[in-house]
Amino acid sequence: MAPRFNKAWHYHTRMVIAGERQPPQPGAPTSTPLYSSTTYFHQSLADFDVALAGTGYAYGRNGNPTNTALEIATATAEAGTGALTTASGMSAIYTAILAVSHLNQRPLRTIVVPRDMYGATTILLRDFVANHGTTVITCDMTNSAEVTAAIHTHQPDIVYIEQLSNPLLRVVDMAQICAAARSVGARTVVDNTIATPIVQQPLTLGADFVCHSATKYFSGHGDSTGGVVVVSDEALMGPLRHINATLGMVLGPFEALQILRGLKTMPLRVMRQCDNAFAIATWLASHSAVSTVHYPGLAQHPDADTAQRTLGGRYGAMVSFELANPQGLRAFVDVLELVLPASTLGDIYTMISIPAMASHRGLSPSERQARGISDSLIRLSVGIESVDDIIADLDGGLHHCRH
Ligand SMILES: Cc1ncc(COP(=O)(O)O)c(C=O)c1O
Image (cartoon, rainbow, N blue to C red):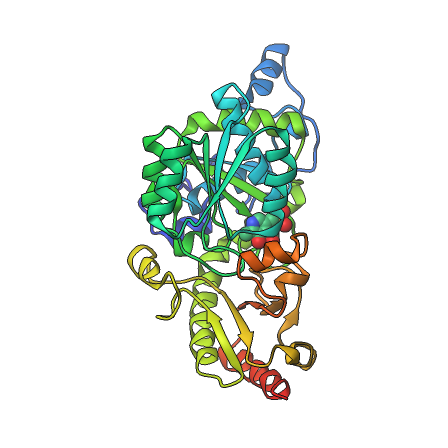
């Protein structure tokens, strides 16, 4: 029997095979090859025409078979019907925003965004959305009444959501916000990088576009920069492809191959990382050298109820916390042996970063303060190592920073 892809297979099975074995030919490779070609020959001008119209390959900016394999795999990961690969997470977010303007056939009037989100996204919205004439309304999306009121009052073109927010790991009620957005004809664009589809699949809850920094959990090995936009409605793919082919924010095929390889183990890795994070957050919460722990799986987290009610029983693999003695920050970080100081997240390695110095460096101190991001907030991206070793390393650091 020819190899095939069965949609009835379980998630883990589909994630191993998605994007491969297409089409099933005898003697075809079991793993997608790297297509580095920037152009493709055609038997006739008619074939060339078809390829450029989007149903084949013509030129690097319009598509590449290695990228197609990753697009099928990411659509499978997020339960979407189509996906577009982009050069980075930031270009994925910007492409999705531009796609809504393209669909509406006019500049965007208003976009509603959360208060707590990734620093570079804040800068993108400020310098390339608000500065181009769109009104950006900020609200607390974890507050159902506030976000619903903002959507009904401002009738936005886009409701932009980050699930789980960076770095305070706030949780929004995805289904409720998507329904409110839909009721006023707004499109929802969700950055699901930190939650990952293992924690929540926004397209199944009514979202239109899901963006990922594939640099993070999808790649998982800290060796490729990339992005992806996944959609639930095939009709949204046309604008996405048009923008990508025109602006050229395309993902290189080598990175596509690396991310495709990473994605096969994403469910395994992320489940282990979430379990490790839960154990570490619980341990940190009872440590006398720690004053505050932000983790949505803990009862003291402000969104614990929403997390329990709406997430699938896993709460992500990031933990943020504050030291009881903030002056001990440098001493704490400097003695760590296993946990890497690094300004990314989602890799197999456990990494530590200080948002005020890294992901949120581009915001002013008052902007950070308004979001509850102190200069001493520590963000931990939990890896797949033995949880006992991670805890032992953190414990050594915490003993060092008490005085
Ligand atoms: C939540 C989130 N979204 C988007 C991005 C941007 O991704 P990239 O660095 O791949 O452009 C990041 C990067 O850290 C992120 O943390």
